[in-house]
Length: 224
Ligand code: 1GP
Image (cartoon, rainbow, N blue to C red; front, side, top):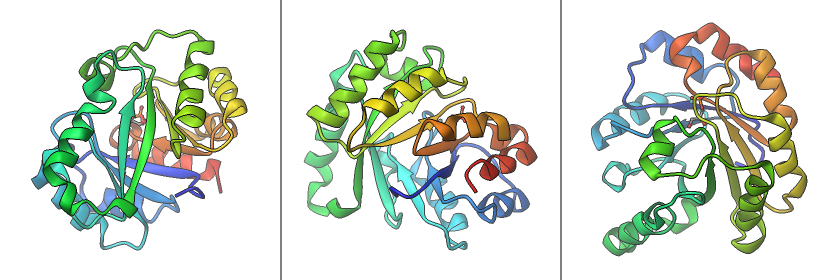
């Protein structure tokens, strides 16, 4: 996963016809991430996984609800929302999931993401009570908490729905020593993809897949 430069994030709660899914999976992207902030169920996740599995590329689940964890993904990304005002989004849901399912967790497939949620209007910010209105230095400090204090393998700057401040992303990149920097939010064409790819290790492209597939497919070109 460290070598991935481009990832498409598919939402199990949204419709995608076969042709579109084929185009996404054959686009040259490095992986498919399955997840969303609302409406994700076991059933719609199984359905999407089985469709993506027809292709050779890696398919990972970003877990947002323990009821929707589906066996058979290549990896499981476990977000810890570091700037949540509610500890249950940092360690609480994870603790409950381990308490309930610990005996069957494939630990070697888990990758913890230090999530920093930065669009206050996004569903994820509202759901997690994230303190998204942060100065650049405050964002960098959260990233350093993840990287240096917690030794998390991933820092995820989540601007979901808006294109973030690239100077802030660059400042985070500058301070990370171990963690992989994943950027997501508002990438909608080749230009924005290139900007984000220049200051992060991995870019995640979500919404635009459902709004303008042709533009979404072009984003792969930013890293190839
Ligand atoms: C969302 O980071 C991803 O979790 C991508 O964001 O939907 O804005 O592309 P967009």
